Length: 191
Picture 1: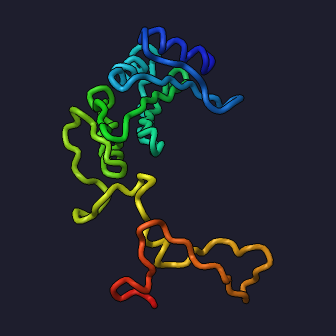
Picture 2 (picture 1 turned 45 degrees about the vertical axis):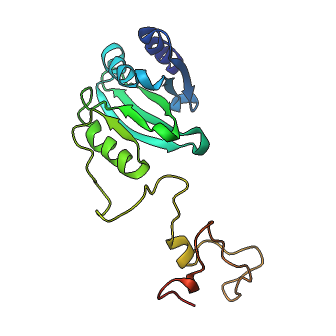
């Protein structure tokens, strides 16, 4: 099946609410199916049962800023060698979606990571305990509004501006995200 046919097949199984498409092009094209948040777990289960996608590859989120979040799961059929990206959108103020751990137990780790990094809850998950960050960590580092203080405290090691060499010093002031004080103002800061 082509990616377009694959997406259309999943939408026909789901009935109302799904929208099929494809991403990429040529031999790298991938079927995509966007579903309403209340049909999320059902769509992932339908990809497994109706399309033969027996391999759970990954699940994560995309921060769409004012648009909320997009949750994406990639599942694959080992026998038929096709895959589909199942996606749903969540509002920023109510970032909750059903867990798919009952459908694919391997999703447990991915949902824990997404919960920790984006602050998205997965209803029905057996244990959304911290996975990667220390217990005292505050915030969700993959949200776009999260300020990475390391970028303020340490100069960016990137390429020089045109006309600069390794022996010239840039006269530009380092940019700071809103609300982050100058490093000289920090206790023990350099300044």
